[in-house]
Image (cartoon, rainbow, N blue to C red):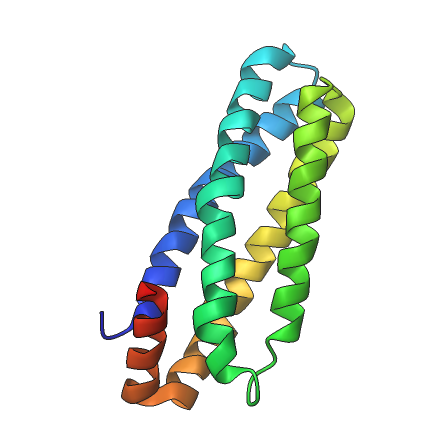
Amino acid sequence: MSDPLRRFEAEHEEALAGLARLQHAALALRAGAPPEPHLAAIREVLALLNGAVHDHNEAEERALFAFIREEAPVAPFEDEHQVLWGLERDLGTAVEQVDVERTARLGLEIVALLRAHIQRENEVLFPLARVLLGPAGLLAVARRLEQ
């Protein structure tokens, strides 16, 4: 893969689709809809967040941020990863406890945070990284992703 950032962008699309489902379910809970089908949907999205999205964030930190840390502002993105992981844990607890109000609130917090995070990566960080890294740096990131 000559541009590993395209992989990250494709993974962002998968995450955004999950966020749309999470938002729909959280808003339905807030509106007083019968909770179980929406809690089930949130559990599915939570599995995506705890699995593929978590792996994606760790890969960004390990393979991309490590190469651009000195020249690009990656600390805010790392901080948001930490906040996101905490919100995911809290959401899992709220769903497990069938706390509908808290589940809806946390779900919408995750949607807002992760959508903004993805937008800043796609529109600011990744274009900057492409310039900073050049073809050789992108190849090094791709190799690190394979490890």
